[in-house]
Amino acid sequence: MTSLDTVLDKDGVRLTVDDAVATVTLTNPAKRNAQSPALWRALTEAGRALPGTVRVVVLRGEGKSFSAGLDRQAFTIEGFDGEPSFLDMARGPEAELDATIAEYQEAFTWWRRNDLVSIATVQGHAIGAGFQLALACDLRIVAEDVQFAMRETSLGLVPDLTGTHPLVNLVGYARALEICATGRFVHAEEAERTGLANLVVPADQLDAAARDLAGALLAAPRDAVVETKALLAGALSRDYEQQRVAERAAQGRRLRDLAGITD
Image (cartoon, rainbow, N blue to C red; front, top):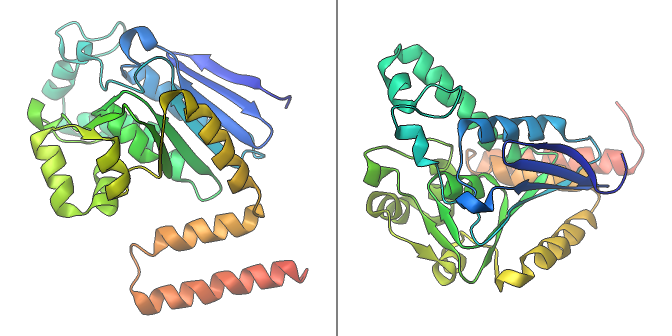
């Protein structure tokens, strides 16, 4: 694998790899990186195409907006070329509709794999599916002009691209409900204050901030980061005593590994 190797470039998604850092870029700024089923399949493919050497994945969008959300063409009678419209999907069998939504969700699930740390760099609009894609990542660096909004409920729908779980975990149930039910904008100051954003920087510093954070993440031994990420992620579903047990088990594995002891 050579430095800055382009692994994938299709349907509005480009994946490049530079040693231990991969970059996934949304590449349709003319439509504010609006999302479609083809884009979601490309994102899923990007996750599957990552070389095993990758430790950090940076997600970014070209242009003034990270992603303005779902392309409204999905709700027209015609839908996208070669794709069933959302209206046609709704008229089909319930099991097929469920399976299709599950397939779409795959584009949003791999970002939290324990062997990776993912960083979303978000500028301008991150609406609906765009907001949920940013939430799919472990960490978020946002520009001062960022505008998050969850507009699905306002359209008679619900957020269904895995965004509800991280949103509640980050800002709490009451604030998450208010953000979703009103569809209002969340700007940079609130995003940082409530935990949606790890860092706020000027828009022209997003890429540099991501490089700095990626470098800091790569400074720690890979296996220790993997164990720590799994430990912290699991804390959400464990009680205090269960977490103590998990900490001991993880530390035992690290100590045996450092001592060169193999099972």
